[in-house]
Image (cartoon, rainbow, N blue to C red):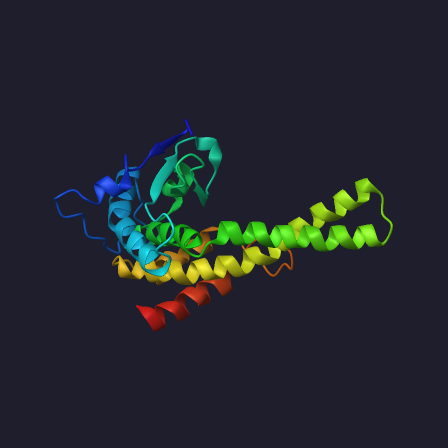
Length: 228
């Protein structure tokens, strides 16, 4: 993790400072979010994400670390993972993404979406979906008299199919929960979801990893109408 520098040295510590954290504002679509502003957004949204996590899944580690990858070659990306040494949930934002978002609402929505993956247990569920797909296609190939190499190839294909079929539903679930988290932190998730229009639209793909952008934006608007 040498390339990853913490936006906040330890986010949980930042949430405990005695000064009042900056309040989020919707700044419109043309004001760039700097790394400094990203720190402010993180300070506001992380305690809300932690609170939702502890309420929804109290047995999980909910002490989120939100880090930035400053490697300019890392592209525009954000993802959630687990620190293998501590079990702490980690959200990685690339410097490219921070520079690409147009306002605090977009960045808050991205962070809300990523922490939602952890709260919903998507990493473990995706691994299980991949395992199930591998077992199904591997067993089918074996029953049909395939060679060992063909069985392995079938199992690998099954794992890919299982993981990708799960991925689309997981993305929409994270969009919905991320909407609630961003909203409770004082941001406007409907403005935040406009970030999808900055990204290539995957369209309708049976084995695509992400749903169409229009479906995701509709999910955010529907959730916001019910919950914000």
